[in-house]
Image (cartoon, rainbow, N blue to C red; front, side, top):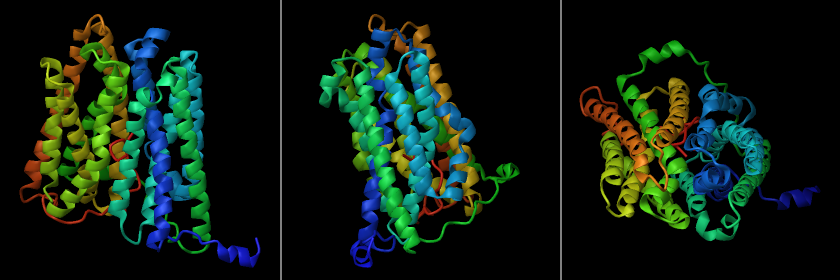
Amino acid sequence: MSGGAASAVRLPSAASGAGRWPVLALLSLAIAGSYYEYDSIAPIADFLRADRGFTQAQIGMLNAVFSIPNIFLALLGGVLIDRYGPARVATWTAALCLVGAALTAIGSPYAVMVTGRLIFGVAEEALFIALLAGLAQWFSGGGTALAMALFFSFARVGSYAADTSPGWAHALYAHGWRLPLWLAAAATAASFAAALVYRVFDGRARSAGRLPPAAAAAERITWSDLVSFDLSYWYILALNILFAAVFFPFRSTFAIEYFQDAKGLTLQQAGLANSWVFFAAIFATPLFGFLADRFGRRSLMMMIGTLLMPLVFLILGTTSWSLWISTALMGISFSVVPAVIWPSTAMLVEPRRLGTALGLVNLLQNLLLAVSNVTAGWLADRAHAGPAHPSGYDAMLWYFGLVSLVAFVSVALLWRRESGPCGHGLEKTRQPALGALSIGGPLAGSE
């Protein structure tokens, strides 16, 4: 390129307000596409059962296998990002997500579909971490909280689009399970394209000195440090992993099928009802994050949000109330807890050990996500849940309700501790340190 042509190209600048927003748009498109793929199983669950004879446990495994590798690889994504940079890792992992999505869409035999979900799961977790780390770099000069809130909101857009796809992509669903999965693969292709463009922007800006120098290698993890974490950290860790073990297996795996069998909804109606959980979070998550920064009371907010979850399953299992009541309560819960829990975790751990702390959360969260998906499917199979026996879902609802009740106990203990002399300022008004967030899980964006 000639000197005159080069001077005409204006690269996005991490230091300028205008230059950062196109990068935010690219990162948001990348995460939205991957979230669409993750949530593509629930809308076709009934097809998989009716057309291919899958058991509930097999359907649960399609999302459980997403989490299984990350039990062991939870910290690897952060290490790769520290070594190679977020833009490179985002490109690599987005490409692997596309491969996994394509294998899932091929989908026959069952082992191919499971392998596709496994590959997608390995890559998507690292992709999320890379995108979040890149976001922190581009917005290091300010506006990080707003950028993260918008980033998370666009992740919800992907999930909302997947849940409503039986309506707006009805022509594809009319042909069975495979075409909707190819549509999801197309969403991951858009995610990969956005990651490629982001890498070009990032590389040019870095070579031009418009991004800060790469961070020093992360401090080596010392597992003996875990014993000195404050008790409040263990309370919030329990909340994080238990809340995720309830919300994601129900909403992303079994909810649409349950709404069809037990509540008599069509596929389109069930998908729409399920989608409103994420639709509410698109707008409400930034609002609750702002309220937490403005007024404090973070552990109290998490306690109220978590209490709504056992109420959701109590209402679903024991009443004939409108489905929109439980949907609204779950939407509020999922807007409040993720908006507050990650910044609060950062306030409970000293910065030099934040990576270890969040890595442990991520590891245990993926473990319980896998266990919870398989357990819920096993309970439904054992009780012969289905359209001919909708009460068979009761055991699954009780399981989710009891786990969410334990999550409420953990956050109640957190609120009690943080309201006393051993508190870390969660109940006070102050900005949490967001810049250190380089590792995350389904609640920050997830899965």
